[in-house]
Every structure is written in C-alpha cells, then in structure tokens.
Image 1 (cartoon, rainbow, N blue to C red):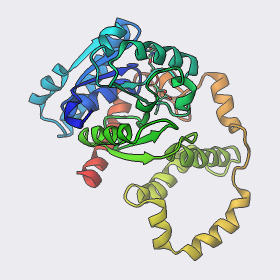
Image 2 (cartoon, protein in one colour; image 1 turned 60 degrees about the vertical axis):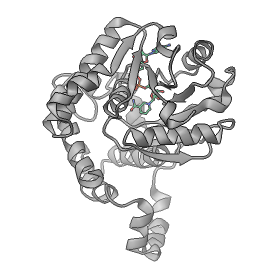
Image 3 (cartoon, rainbow, N blue to C red; image 1 turned 120 degrees about the vertical axis):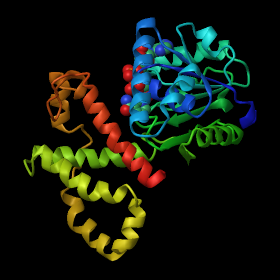
Image 4 (cartoon, protein in one colour; image 1 turned 90 degrees about the vertical axis):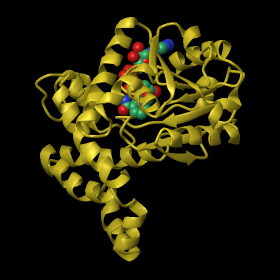
Length: 314
Ligand SMILES: NC(=O)c1ccc[n+]([C@@H]2O[C@H](COP(=O)([O-])OP(=O)(O)OC[C@H]3O[C@@H](n4cnc5c(N)ncnc54)[C@H](O)[C@@H]3O)[C@@H](O)[C@H]2O)c1
C-alpha cells in the first residue's frame, strides 16, 4: 500500500487519547471512523472534539468556517465490523490492559482487509504481548502519541520484532501528512524514548517533594522556566554541547549519587493513588481543581501549547 492508497482511517478507543488522534487525522484531511463500547462515550468524545476545534479556531489555527468540514470527515460507530471492515489504517487507543488489547487484536484481525495496518498507542506494552495471535505481524506497529495528541508535534513510531520496513515507512509518511513529527524507534523498549527520560525526571521531582526541598509550585516554576524553557527549542544533547561536556561531566559526578535510585514508584505517588487523588479528573492531585471537568484548565493549557506550536513549529 502507498500513501495515496490510504483513504480510510479507524480509531478504536474514544478516551483521552483516541478522540484527539481522530481530530488530528480529520484535521489533516483523512476520513476517520471512531469506535468505542457505547454511544454515550462516543457522544462525549464528539463533544470534546468539537470543543477542541473551537479552541483551535480561537487561537487562529483553523478558520471557523473549516470546522464543519473537519467534523464531516469524522463518523462514530460501536460496531467493530463496520469500523474496520474497510479501513486502511487502524489506530488502537483502548485501555492499557494486555488482555483487552489481545482480544481486540484477534477480533479486528478477522474483520479487517489483509492490507490494513494496526497501529497501537500503547505506552508500555510490547506488540508481541497482544498481537502475537494475528496473521499480520508485519503490519503491526506502535504509534505513540502524546496528550493532547492533536497539538503535541512528536509521535514515536516503534517497530516490533516482525514489523516490516514497508509498514514503518508508510506509517511514517501518514504521520508526516498529518502534520506530525514522527520519530523512528527500531527496537521495542519499555517507555520508548520520551517516557523513559520523563520517568527518571518525574521520579526525581517526587523525591524532591518528599524531602521537602521546595513547594510543588516552586518545583513546577523552576522546571518550566529553565529546563523546560530550553528543552522547548534545544534537545538535551544540543544543550550539553553548548554548555560544555566537561561541565556536564562534573555536574553528573557531583549530583548523580544523590538522585532517586529506587526501583519502586515514589511513595508520594503511591499514596495519591491509594487515596484516589488522581489529578484534574478527581478534582485533587498536586493541586486542587474546583471542577473535575474544568474546561478552563484544558483551554488554558491548550492556549499555551498552541503559542509554543506557532513559535517553534509554525
Ligand atoms: N493518557 C495518556 O496520556 C496516554 C499517552 C500516550 C499513550 N497512551 C495510551 O493510549 C491508550 C489509551 O489511553 P487513554 O488514556 O486514552 O485511555 P482512556 O481510558 O481515556 O480511554 C480508553 C477508551 O477505550 C475504550 N475501550 C476499552 N476497550 C475497548 C474495546 N474493546 N473496544 C473499543 N473501545 C474500548 C474505553 O471505553 C475508553 O473510552 C493506552 O494504551 C495508553 O497507555 C495514553
């Protein structure tokens, strides 16, 4: 299959990630069917897509008049056969549960045309853990998007042991056409690139909090206004080159032994999960939120992301 043959997309799972992946593909001109287990979930997803298009329009990323045509490219369906029966490229964004994914892959393998590529949005599972019973191991791939998927530019494209080069290259081309920055990762490794680096940094942030080194607000301010500020335009290796490798050598030598070393999840996170303090969705995380579906929080976040997007990726 060539890029010009990819006409019909399907996205399975209309949750946090799926609804915005649909938006990204429809925005780029693809026809997309969105599937989930119930009509009420799909209705909610459609409303969130509409709301996110409104935010894009208010930030001059899309003309108001074009919203209608983006929405016309999206249909929703609870029926798996109708969703994948004619699909050229399926993105799977269902729960991060190996059994749920395995059952789904076995079903869609039966229901999809032979040429269809299946791209999983898994953050931590291996293709072999849920795709090993399908007949199309050469057409299984991971496309790992970042929340909010319609805004964050990078998508990690991860090759499984049996994924063909053709599948990698076509997936890469599809994501390019969708305006994304695809990153090819040639070997499955838990967390790929971004979440591996992020996990180490996040555990250290938790450790600083636990030790009472600074307040949550000051830790966030410190990272946003320094590390984050630089990382928005320079990669860590570029930063290292510009600062001097000798200086980094000394800093690593002096600091590394005192940083977070445990193989356990930091206890502050364990406690919050135990107490049900899960962030915005429960109204309480490191900060408090008045309303767990606070549209203002999301719009405020997206406005800042979109400013960055225009500045660095205009
Ligand atoms: N949340 C993130 O920031 C993030 C980032 C990158 C990748 N991911 C990955 O993306 C995937 C989805 O994560 P999410 O955060 O969107 O989850 P979510 O819980 O918000 O959404 C999952 C959706 O899948 C649906 N679903 C479950 N089983 C299904 C089935 N058999 N058929 C159709 N729909 C089904 C659920 O009803 C739900 O709407 C996971 O693999 C996750 O690891 C998440």
